[in-house]
Image 1: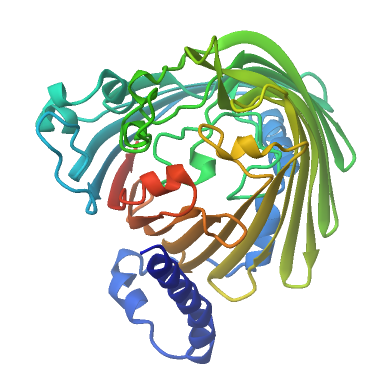
Image 2: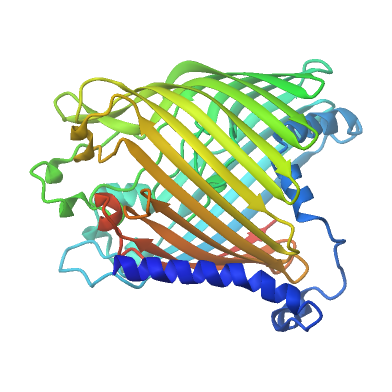
Length: 483
């Protein structure tokens, strides 16, 4: 089964690679899909832009931040009104590979999500300052429809309902070269879109791995950011006041089925705090953008995204780690090359008492010169120093070299109103440890109405946790309304 799925993945990648060549050869032919969807937008055509130019603008975080604060500075003084925006979303999932559960067991088969989600944002501008507050939450009635009594408290707490304060901050200019931003915010480090190397500031929502891109999984944390701009350089100092844990899957749930491990401690597996702790740590970044390339240097002490046992395995908690690293992008003709490297220190594991260091490295590229198409490949290795073979066993389950590969292909059509994307992520030097592949279509019905539909297939393998969730395959859909 594993090799059949891998074969299907290779076949789909091959189709995606061959398709743009065919598209170029038939460039003068009518596009049936565009004709079918063209009714949604037959009056406005955006001018063409080179895909590589778009990519260069995409990783220019320095220019984005400068434009944001400069926009506040240049805004007319009369624009002091409150801006209130909102978004409503409905998302659903259909798990088609699960077997029907026994009586009084949690049922994850069939329709297992019918989530209603809302977001409310309030913004206020004053000359060179801006304030923003965002509140978001969701409720999923699927558990009531299927019978709440059959689901664990942990499952209901993590998936049935939620409300939280999201990005909420005050930002502005202290001078022409100095900016200040205080509050709950997201700080993106690094160049990779699919694999985290230096991007360590914000924890992730890991409750449903693989279903959402990293850019939509970051959780804001309360911090103070001071930025100084000098020529092509941006110098930033960060004080992270909130140590926020990642959101993990429910114990004994669909994505953390430890009851299937057949371990003596499985039924008494300790929970972990979901509350933030308030202990300030610090970080610094130096970022420069030049003609055809950029360079970023990072250093920070942050909360580890991996938990470890404490108190004779009676509790779990997250420790602090130190990260020092760099990231760079270089344009070479039609290619965008990217590299990241980081030294991670003071990692705590469960199978050994000694803390370890790890060297994480990534190389990747994007090819964007075929009209309407983009391709990217990223390969990363996490190399544990002073490795002990005991670390291969549960619950650490890591090797000395932990490889991850991500390939993404996407195509825009119908005047950029629709995008079809395929992503495959594999673990292990040959992909033998497992992973997932996902294909989905995003479509803008109007400026305020969007839909997304797709499917994800989890790939079992040598890694225990990926093998345990190999039957979590599903179809998914989402529709959103912006106000």
